[in-house]
Image (tube, rainbow, N blue to C red; front, side, top):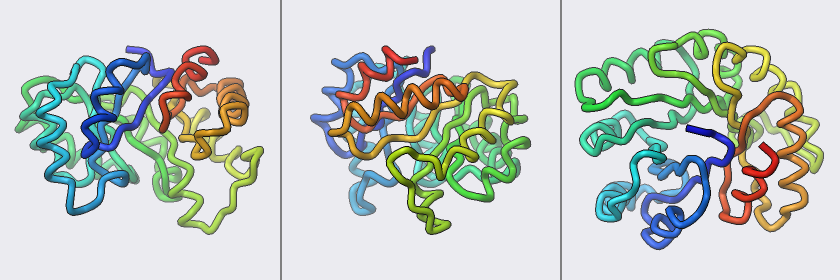
Length: 216
């Protein structure tokens, strides 16, 4: 599987889910976490199941460990794990998956906290399920009161740290670009992170997919 364009889709929005599979994203991530209101998280699982999605290129971004049961029952091939911070966290998820899974479940840790970035070496060493990692700059910036400017210079060192410490894995996935109407800015961001060593980028809008696939 390629990881150039990773499209995140809210798990409770049926129309967006169905549209996602008409697009050219390398990986579709059906979200149970931050884009889904708390009161709609269980409904999201029912909606995802009813859509009969193509699981070959679909991962689930889980919200809590309870979501692992849904992932394994439905035999999704992978998850994105928000706020991955320790090897112990990965081991806990691994033990749950080993008991419940029907197919091997890959794990993409999302590094979006200072703690996670501090423990990046041990996170990248979890070869049993981790072959690529992802950067989440927005929650990171919020947690340390960091204002990120248009040229994103404030997160450059974090990105370099991710590249340096993930050389034994596939090229990592860069953070999303929130101003989805600014396609010029998005392409510049893609080109910048490609030059650093990233292999793809999170997308939050269909218009970003083509640019990702072209740049990466």
